[in-house]
Length: 387
Image (cartoon, rainbow, N blue to C red; front, side, top):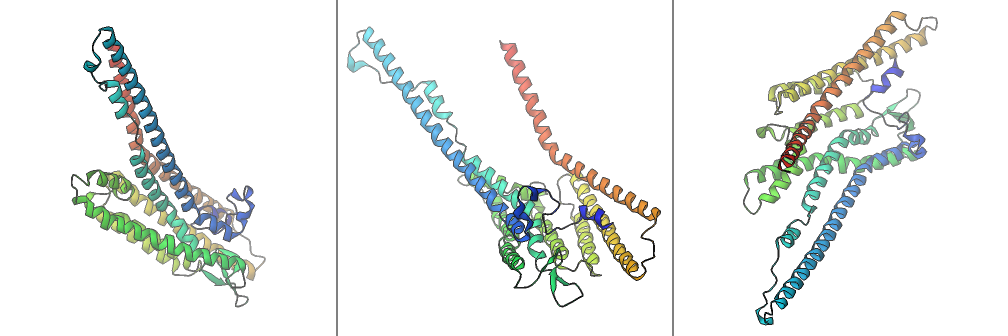
């Protein structure tokens, strides 16, 4: 049963079984895998910087092309006016100065300036990246400190990677310890602090301090911060901090508490039940479907974890009985069939919930596509009628 349950385990300290080690064998080293995981955020940051540089160069190029086009238009109009005046034998002093035509004015107005939107898009992408990577980065950082004894000697080993001893003589553990300390400072601590400052200080302050001078800046800032507050009720804009606290609490329990400690399941269930209670009490999302899905996701997570923990502990008891009595049958066909059925049912339920959540997330985009297509059809129909 352990081989079946590892595919839905919560944390994994190694890259084995993920397939990526076939392309990059150096990821077999857990310290290298942890370092690569830690460098995902800087890599995304470099990509966003490249995107900003591209938009800046594009803006300069567009302005240069617009200026050249405008200059050519003015020169051509001036020459045409000069020819017309000379044909009429008008004195040179009476020649009217060239005036910018509508085409020249349109050329000056239509010069694209994508820099402001690029900054907004980059800020939003960075916040999404930090949000999605936070739980995994925290798990990876805290798992290094979860060292347990194997029962044979006083040597302690990393529980998620049991072949690495927690000793300064181990090169792998020393590197992982360095990586973990950096990750705890930069990610585990700094990301919640950054989100708290953005929501409680920046967003709250600018939500009522809107003047004519600050209005464009505030609008862009709210768009950058939209991943943290757009789905919640206006008075509960801060609720994302509660979600971050729940994820941090789960990461601490999962990664630092002994896998076989009797109180570990109680702590995880307590965090999940507290989250369900808070969710049901606050009902923070704007849409009722989002609130219902959040409760369903938390409840299904709790059921899945209880089943997983029960199977793991039953497997430990079964292995102990095998060691005490080698003639004892491994398991009955009926119990194995029940376990497979329950495992398949949990897998199907989790998959269905993920599909529903993904569909709900894509609904705004699908509605936007429908509205855009309808608008384009209407415009095309009007043009055809006018033609």
